[in-house]
Length: 387
Image 1 (cartoon, rainbow, N blue to C red):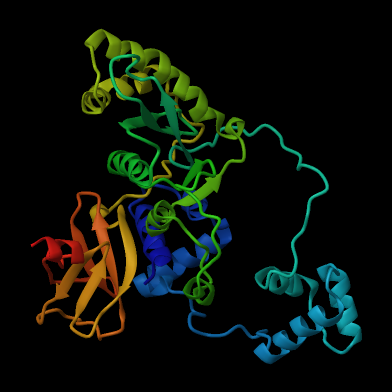
Image 2: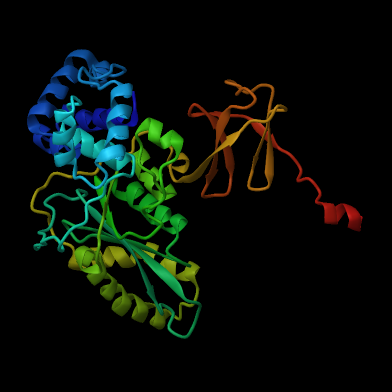
């Protein structure tokens, strides 16, 4: 089972225990009620096996041969460069190369041969609050003189539930990937896994890089470390194109900038450690009791964490090659895979190097952790000459 199927299992288990209705489960999973009913029936009859897509591993019946695709793209570049997908599809069909304009549009986008330029800005209208607790959580960092003239500059990482206004925050040096993971981790431990996160387009949350060959073959979108963490948990990321779009959390910053700054002034707080102790000691709980309100619906869209080890979710992961002597190198450090490792990766294959937020390093093969020993760093040329 993949992550999507395991997420469905957790939600349907909540339906089975009669904690939520099937209609709410459909909304949490982002599907129609009719589809949720079908999946729920298969889950009751077949158990976990019923959640696996029955078309898994099979090519679609309408798959177009790769040679035909290459001929169409080559013909487009020879004669129809600059043509829109609809007109180009009509001309190609006249030449005996029938193709749907939507399929051609997707191929041209993937090949970098077509991009649409909007003539004007899209129309926007007011967005009402979400109806369910955990349906969408807004995340943002607030740079402010939190200690006034008593301490160093820092950033408040703030999470605000869109439906209720419930807030959870921490103080960090900057709005970094680690800070974003720490505040989300605290939210997940307290309330569960939200359905989606609404954030801005900073490089911490999304990336503009081109997909790698491996991502292209797998059909995956490029993700940041934070985005990969959200993918593991099944959290959707929604990006805002202006501060006004995520006004809920922006306005909540003002509450902290007023009340939290004054609270720290009264206590003489001047370090981040002391500030986080104040926050964890009940400050944002007090804000929630005073300002949060009941959602329009009583259904909680948070998904229980279950047996997931959050330390292995909120971490940095990179792929590294195994040398012929079963040594893996990463960040100027060398890790010797032991003889007892099972499964033991073959030389030249890839392993995942995971660094947890506590600084510990773990090697993974096909999702399973394997034992290793860290080797002493090799002395550089300057150190050898100095000795």
